[in-house]
Amino acid sequence: MFKKFTFRGGVHPNYCKSQTEQMKTEVFPAPPIVVIPLSQHIGAPARAIVGKGDRVLVGMAIGEASGHVSAAIHSSVSGTVRAVKPFAHPSGHLTEAVEIENDGTDETVEFEPIGASWREAAQGELVRKIAASGIVGLGGASFPTHVKLSPPTNKPIDTLIINGAECEPYLTDDHRIMVERTEDVINGALMLKKILGAAEAYIGIEDNKQDAINAVYDRVVTSKFDGLKLTVLKSKYPQGGEKQIIDAITKRKVPTGGLPMDIGCVVQNVGTALAVFEAIMHGIPLYQRVVTVVGDGVRSPKNLLVRIGTPARTLLEACNADLTDAKKVIMGGPMMGLALPDLDAPVIKSTSGILVLNQTTEPVRKYPCINCGICMDACPIRLVPSRLAKFVEKNNIEDAISWNLMDCMECGSCAYVCPAKINLVQFYKLGKIRVREKRAAEKKAG
Ligand code: SF4
Ligand code: SF4
Picture 1: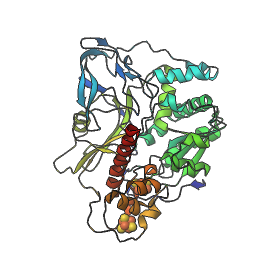
Picture 2: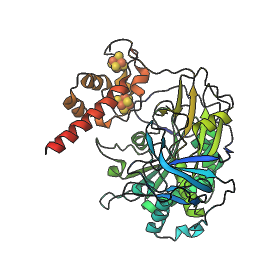
Picture 3: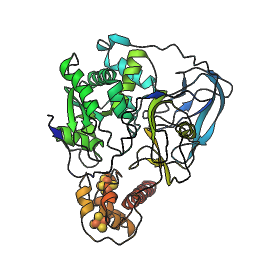
Picture 4: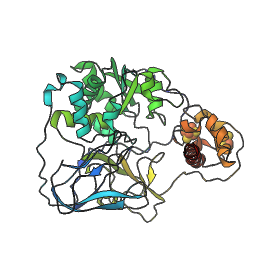
């Protein structure tokens, strides 16, 4: 019934979404203590504007953006600041964070919405509201949204894509948002479209989310939501990658080393569209998000609306996770998420899921490369993964660069299909570190 769009390459992992895809989002109670990192986005960490002993309210700014590419941070509870110091972060590093003791009253700041008059509001006013609300890309990239919505004047945007692919296995938070908050996501998309002045706006949803497709179809096709088109995508990983979803929907290709804005496109995740709606319509900054807690080690998997700063451990306990046989606890999806070295690390703006996996299919180098070329077919951006890995292994960085190593999105599709079980992504990560070191040394040497 729907024409289905896709991109070249990619893989078909077992999606493992049945545990939670039909589970309605539950509101998770704010914990007694939250630890809110000042670095939850790409760019400069926020600067703390509260100190030990200060009283804070839900939605109060506790960190201000400290540069052009940075984002504000807000308290997710009301209570008292216990400390501003380094704490465990999902990245595995200690980073500066604000620790707050929850007083349990949930007293909020007075929110200042733009409200229903957003259609008449100036573009700049809407972007300032988004910046003040600390909104970043909630699909995992965490790029500050207000920056993405302010492209240079020589890069006009004609196409907005709302990314509802959710192609990572296990995760169902975006799926539930599209089913449960359909109109709000669509309104958020229309706000983004207005800000960008885009002529076209699409919402792309993979065909394994039929109820989300139906919900959006009902609103988009049969009602007042003019200006947004529904596009059904074939379920394939990494369909939710920016370049892949743009390719699937518009057939445009982001050039090597380029950005979507170079070809007139901006991609925003459905969770980001919802956050934009909340900020503009209700004045609510980003202090909570939906998180899927799931995996074969989780006995009561759920989709939860969680306050930022809630420790991963608290969510795992609430979902009856059994870590006895856990091979890995991951924040995010199994393909591109981060292995959590410390369960005290908190939920941050980019936390789409917490997974407890008792089995992993992680590749380990077992056999030498047999030059089968399967990895090349799987690569969604047409790199030559086996060759790149060999260049890095031999420390031949010049060749790795000229074979476009820096375009690799570390999606893991190549490693997923490799019959020799080579951990290819590990080579690309290492290669990129060496490229950056080389460039820094060249810069220093003048
Ligand atoms: S990890 Fe890099 S090289 Fe491998 S498939 Fe993904 S983009 Fe291609
Ligand atoms: S899939 Fe694995 S074995 Fe085959 S060419 Fe690529 S790296 Fe070599």
